[in-house]
Length: 602
Ligand code: SF4
Image (tube, rainbow, N blue to C red; front, side, top):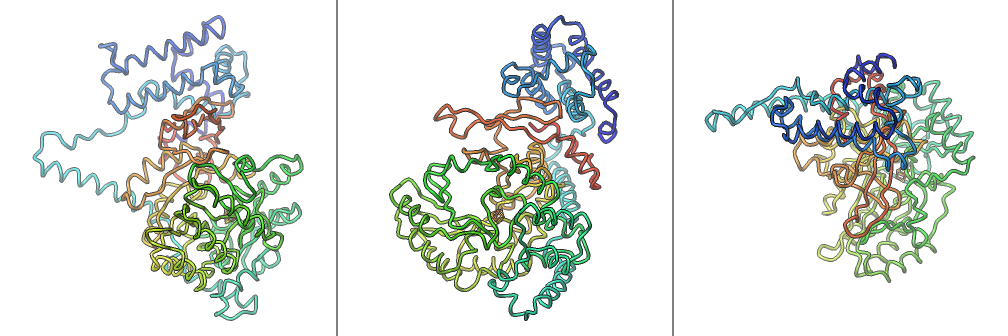
């Protein structure tokens, strides 16, 4: 695969025609586009019939059923690409591009390598040539039951060794060598702020000493020239930047390494990010990707589902994540106003609406607020009989676990009423390296109260290597946290660095998550559609690949989750090209052969 990815466009085009000479002939010898459309469609249907075994003597009949099933999906994708309705939606004609390329009426420079490579793989799939080198295994043939089991058990051992080989590559924040280094940095931070070790346990001390400027940051950890330039630009463009002392202690003091690249990326705005946010603001572009304005029936409330809504009492967090979906409204801590009056109105609204069974208190991060405010809020919700669950969405377990103090634990104890109303925590660990002994202590205290802790991970480039998210799931589960969702990154321009193709998240689910025990992979991969909310990525009914663009990006249509109740317009989404993603992994030292089936996730 690497060889193919490195070919120039001319050679890729040759490969493409060689992958399907018959298709090339149709494109070459048809008079006009509509003739081509008919002929290509018929040609694909003809091949498809073979996979349905309608032509008894075709050599395709004898392919393995797994290969046939994959081929049918490739044919469906190809047929979707040539549909006129999809041309209208995407304002691009895939077929016309191929037609012109075959007849030398379009220069190959007009399409990206990503487009050509994806097509070569697609045609390989159409012709049933994907699994030809994969070993067949007939575990259950002609052996005694015990021998079948022994053979199968051996195969399962091999899978497990493969999982371990990968998972063990990723250190966690509980790995002894990592803990030791972090302890050293923690002491340096305390010294810098003239503090005592007891101060470390006080969240208010962390809040007071949140790092918001380059000078402080570079006095404590080594920054590269690029990182410094990016932070200077962020400051100039007014992009909020906040790191808690606790989170900074998770950095590597001597400069970016494998054990802190994810943390640095999550809190230090990159050049691309700052430039893009600045441009969006200047052009008055709407950064509210989820269109929360259109789903807010009353201030501070977002409602996308029948029985649960989001309540946002505060627009800031102790620490600001670069990829935050609410980056359009999350403000610096000192600039965020308290909204008690508006929240009171929102609570009254919830009280009147008996359909609301669950309230997700989020923000910003509600644990930025003090315990007396939270007590007032929980007490109000507790008195609303129809609210059966309060979810507290907080990243403080990661960013400042000291916030889980006695006062807050008492609130959890008081308002978690078995049989009447549940209170639970939904947190946000991105990587196993974000765990720390302090986080572990905080989780333990919550769990001892019988309160559940769930995790929502955003599946970004920095957490997407083979089995990297499995390493997180495993660490979370033994630490008392249940993986709940893994989110596809939002299609926001400013967060391009973080984005991962949908095909990769589907591949992760099938080839990695599926291999670990069920209780560890309790999260669901989801795609968040503006206004409508989450769509299950593993559910084929929810989405469909409809187009391949000249830059190699796929376009998907997402069908609303309530499609069986009401006909609503689907949502169309342009993904990031698989080719670009693989090239980036390759540059970062990954063996991209391990990802080679990614092209066949639709
Ligand atoms: S903690 Fe949550 S709300 Fe706050 S910046 Fe991070 S992702 Fe956004």
